[in-house]
Structure formats: C-alpha cells, structure tokens
Length: 181
Image (cartoon, rainbow, N blue to C red; front, top):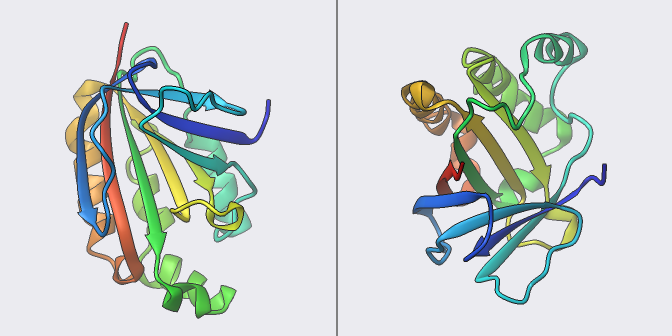
C-alpha cells in the first residue's frame, strides 16, 4: 500500500459530504462527495484535492504507541458509516518551537494522546502529514465512527479544541461525511 493519499472533493466518491464548517482561517468550498484515493488522484472534476502522507508516529512515547496499537481499530469497519476529515494548519510560532517544546504542549500540557485514547475503539483515526510536501495544511486527520458514536466524537473534538495546543492553530476545516452504502 502506498503511503500517499488524496482526499478529492467533488461529485464522486464513496463519502457524501453532509457539511463543511470553516472554523479558523480560509475555508474550503462545499462539495457533494469526497473520494479517498490511496495514490495519485484524477484532478479532472475535483473542486479541491488535499494530499498527505502517512508516516511514523512523531510525538508519542513507546508506551503510548504500544497502548494505541492494542486498542486502535482499523479503518473501513462496516459499522463506521460516519467520518470526518479535519485539515489543520499550525502557526509559524508552533513550527519555531523545538521538538521537545512541541511534545510538551502536545502531550504533557494538552494530553492529546490521552484524550484520543478515551474514545477508542469507538472512533478510529489516521493522521496524514502534508506540511513538508507543499500542501496548504500541515495535517489531515481522518476519523471514522458508527452513527451511535457521534456524540463521543463531538466530545473528543470539544476536549481537544480547548487545549493549549489549539492556540497554535491558524487554519481548521471540519468536513463531515456519511458513507454511501
């Protein structure tokens, strides 16, 4: 499997876009569907394409990585009919911090991984990095969950968005989706 992904907003794809909330900064145009492509995407009829790479875990300790592996569900579970794609761009101030300073904010102050683990296995997620490939966002986070876990997913986002880490977010879009069956 290729580690390159493209999220193609347009008129085609397995996911119906139910809403796009432009939360911070410049938003994205509303589209009917989203196609998730592992590899290169056809740009012919796309309103927009967001590209990212899956990569190694960057801010988690070995203990956290092992714990995540034990309870993190796989994507594309049959019951996970709901999804969210949340592109985020951090400020220059964030990127001027050293790795250990970012880790301090990300985990020791904001408790990002700990919060996320509170919602596993109900909410599956995959992070895509895009800062170093010239894309307009730094991260694309893909979440999948069953309809009965929608409130849990909203709680997860509410808890993360009030942390110190979010002081460094300069652009965030929240794209909600339903899988077409």
